[in-house]
Length: 465
Image (cartoon, rainbow, N blue to C red; front, top):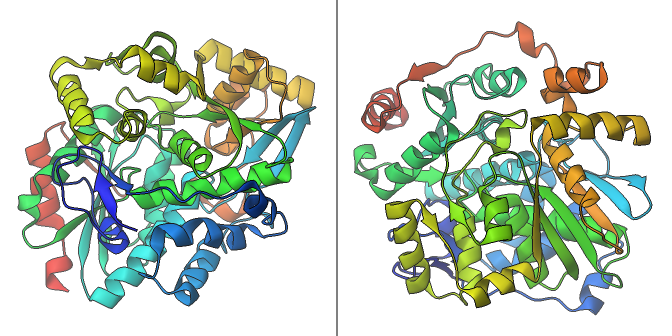
């Protein structure tokens, strides 16, 4: 398998080259040059597989011979060994035809663990073989940071710099990042919002000269491996509720469009998906696109669901690439327009193509509180604020087929919102330990890319290894 840029003007790379990359040189995101497709008969034959066995089936076509199967199998097994549920991604039935897929049983209690436990180990394997040291730079709106840190904290060939918006993530999310005592981890609190952090990371990958000879590697979902790992749980959940004999719909809380794009890739690979419902909060750029063909930037508003406080969804570019039949020049033109004007729209034909599989819904903070309250009262189930947006979305659409709501974070990560909603404060799981008693370490920096680059250059110790 080779990987090509969504903007069509960068050399094709191998899987290992993509693992250790960020943006393509033309500013695009990497995509596989072809999408493996499985028949209903093949998919049906996977019903008996465990999560890790299924992951191997899904991932091998994207990796090919670049990582030997015996090593890949061990990496996958190790990646999910620290999950705190025997099924790894258990399904909870809310009511007839309505299920919650719990993706928060990993070490940092968020769905990002599925991709980042795997990515950290893949990177460690590749870098050990290459005897290469790298710098990872990432941006987080809450959960990516802690999951990336957890996945990379013991990797001797990696130094990680994670940018988060100062004061705009929950206390639990922040402490999960800043209490990790590892010399290769650096937390940077940026006086701005997530989009500011993400813009800086993209700019640094586009102009990596400041890092000298050291390679910059991405852990945000611009890294294809993140998407690849997340495809697995769509197949896993669908098989549990009657696929491929029946079509399934998924409701997905999403800000950066990576999680739901993995679902789109699952459909391209042959999984019979009826609808992918984009669930957003009041930062509704994706909802405006899927309802009005209006992808336009507005200011970011702080909300009860901070991981979705985003106005520029990186992985949306990957969807444009697919919708425009992989026309890199067209995608490049659209993204240039968006950078210049802060908005874009697509042709009528492309918009209708998107609506064949996508629909969307938005929920504000008051609606989120009410959904958490009603779900608890009616179903005896506590959802986090992000998951609540997805629960809200399936109430707005008439779905006859089974529909699966992706629960992306543990409710205990957002105690204030849960207590406001149901009058109870959920406990942190025992495996999180004394999080609030640990010392925090982070550096506050202004919203200035030159200051951030200087800090990274001055603070990196890889050159002394």
